[in-house]
Image (tube, rainbow, N blue to C red):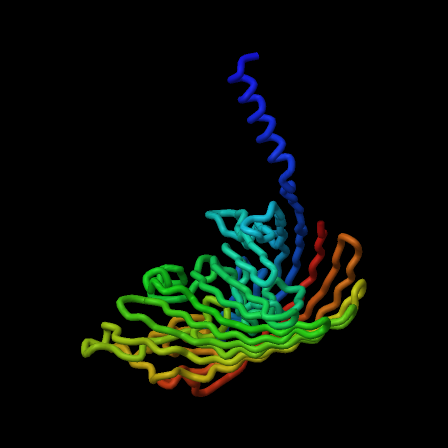
Length: 410
């Protein structure tokens, strides 16, 4: 054997040995096969063909009959999920991990498609965690309702997964601070061309979040503030939102709640949005926008393990606009977001003034199988929009929803 071959052989075996000594990457699959049957007593604003239900639609009269007072029922298996948890070799003195998670809730031209939910990597040092990728928005947070429904408590609870760079700093064993920069992708703001990520893209600036959390064996308490800027056109609008939450948990009992003050949280599947506050002299060229302000709160109690009962109570209130809305030549307001409707042959512009929900549930959990039933009573109070964002001539509509779910978990 020549000297060259001997050197190459030594280098090859050295390389193989070095790789053999590296900790192996570990991959763990998880997920569930979800089957949902639901009934609604009237038409609703929903997502994913009704799997995520938000609120009942307003009374829309045609020849004196409410066209939204029509019940519906459906069974779907699209709420099926597949995920991979990954852990790998340390990098830069940090533990490394990642997650890729998907479901079948995406829409194709005539069928449902595989859709990304989460895809991120994490570096964990002793007191610092760096996350890069798509996961839950920090406003969704570590405290969210336990619901059988896929809506996760929306529109009372923020519901959003976004691409982000997030850093968490542990000040001590109980107290941590979080800062994040985010952009919109699947959950987006509303604007002149509908819902889309283009408004944040054109604004350049990312969504900014700052938060603090105090966590002990049984308690989790936290607060956060969010600042977002979008550009619906040549003009920009900035919004500030804040959340405070608390949770108590032991082996069988969960009690938790959250309060959210929000401006333009349509990207979080929450009520409200923004509207035009000033036109130029031609009454068509937009000069500025104003936020709709909203406050939401919910409380959730869950008891049991194998046999589990739970209750969600939620309420959301429209607080009006920060500035007066302006009127176009056709004597109409221009608004964007959730809860705004032109009804009764477009003769009235209405908005949700108040929304509340009562949703009890019962679940039976086996090792890999879960049976559950949830009753959701949601009431929406609509009224004609006024210049200050409040309503005139309020009235209420109700939806009774029954959800039966059977999941096989793996």
